[in-house]
Length: 325
Image 1: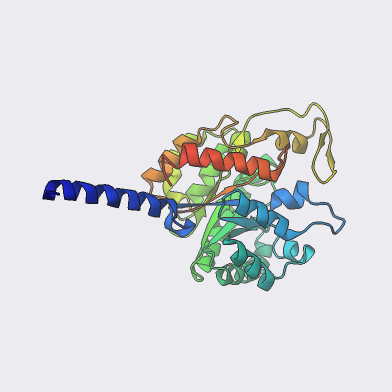
Image 2: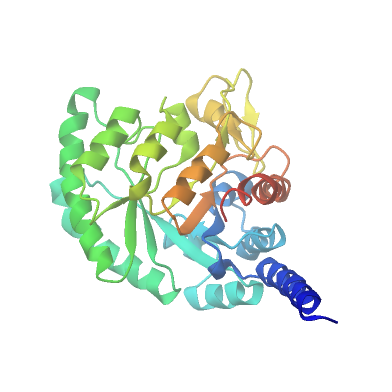
C-alpha cells in the first residue's frame, strides 16, 4: 500500500471513529441537555390517592432519551411523593439522569417578602449544588392591575439582581421565566422591560416559548435581540386551540369549557406540531454559543407523556440537532 492510499484509509478510519464517539457522547459533552418538567405529572398525570410513584416519571425521561428533569414545587413535591434527596440521587444515578434545575418563586415585587425569599434561595441553591446543578429558574410573582405593572416590575427587578448575586455565590445562574397566566411578566413589552431593568451580568433570562406565544410575543425577534441573556429556556410548541368543551386530564380532573386553563392546556403541542419555528431559535443558540439546559415543559399530553416526549425527541434528533447540538 503506497503512502497516499494509507493516509486515505487512515483518515476514513478516523472519520468513522469520530462518528462513533460523537454518537456515544454523554449529555455533558453536548452543548444542549434536554429536560422535562415534573409539573406535567404533578398537575395533570398523578392522582392524589397515593398511587403515584416518582420513579415512573424518571423512567419515562430515561426511556425517551432525555437527560434530566426540572423539579417543581420544591421541596413539597419530594415530600408529597416520598422521595427524599438521598433516594432521588440514587434513582437519578441508576438511570444516568440529572437534576437540571428547580422552579423558584416568591412575591419579588413586595419588598417585605424579600428577606424570606432570600433565605429560601440559600436553601434552594444548596440543594441544587448538592446535585451538581448550576441553574435556578425564577418565576415572577402574581400580576397586579396593568396600571401597577411597571412599579411592581421595577421592585422585582431590583430584587432579582440581588438574587442573581446570591446564586452566583454558589456558582449558580438565575434566569427569569415568563408566564402568560396571571404572572407579572407576560407580554413582549414586559419581557423587554424586565431585561432592561436587570443587569445582564447578574441575572439572566429563561423564557418559555408557549407562554411567549400566548403573550403575543415575537419570539424570533426576542431571541435574536436578547440571545446573549439566555441561561436556559423551555421549548413547548404552541397552536391556539380554544377549549369549546371540557378538558379531562389523565388524573381525572376536569378543566371546564371556555376557561383559560382548559384553553391553555390545548394550546400545548409536541415539538413540530405547532406554529413556533424552533429551527430558527436553534440558529440563535448556535450564534450565541449557548450551552445549557432546554426543558420540554408540557402541561398536557393527550395520549401520554411517553408518547409526547418520544415525538419531541425524534424532532430534536431530526430537525434541531443538525442545526446545533
